[in-house]
Image (cartoon, rainbow, N blue to C red; front, side, top):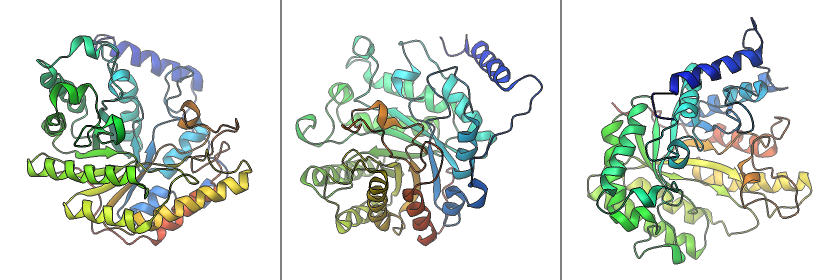
Length: 391
């Protein structure tokens, strides 16, 4: 559909579908999961320390039925209780938002924005550019002669639509890598780098600031948490790109550290991560923990042992990041195993058992990893100020 021609009709249909599902004359009443009222939400605990806590939107817009906000009332109640921020998952990534060059579908993102606004949540956009995940039509439509204008126009349209309402944008996702996928400067090879060179980052951040000058702009990066050579390289090249952008007066405010933790695989050294956080903070940037979860594919099959392994991995990570004053945001990549991205990825367990990567289980019961996060937030020193939109 085009951006405007069908948006009103489809949203009206979706609203009608939701009304039918609830029933005529029935008020919306979320059903809280057992025990929820007896504990403060993580968002409230984090806010007491001027840390912003939230989660990505998985579970609020299920793909296996009508696009309907709050279709799982109990999960929705949990999300509202625990989160002070919502982050989009796939809804504003280019292939989903723009299935054809001149076809735009903002419906899902608009519904999530409405949900966040109605529930007094900050809204976080993920992500405007990701060179590894581009539409199939991109190569036929974009070349070196129009790539810069394409980036600017795309970002102006997306970020401009929600201007003044987004706390933070992941402007570029996973820009730095290692091995054969990396150029000499560590930037990930791909269509954006091929067509524009390293300047595609500069162009993207400047365009986002032009379109949404109040949003905090973030470079979101994966695989920088562990003490191995490949991640040493990524940390070094990430710092190099951050320095380059700042030297060029590019508007950037934060580094996002994804934090998909994988116990049983790589060595974790607290001093290494803490030194990296210090290096980022020395540049005058905030640090956002953007995609926190525990990938449990290498943990035991036994559920109590697996949950304890996940909790231990979370604790050693949070013992570094939560005391650090530069860390201003924690965003979980999902909230419950009921809606678990890992089951749709190549990171599933080989024994066929379902992943338990999230803070709550399928029944929306908090797991040991939840208690570790709550304890860590309670123990964290208060930041001097909370994250807000830029003046």
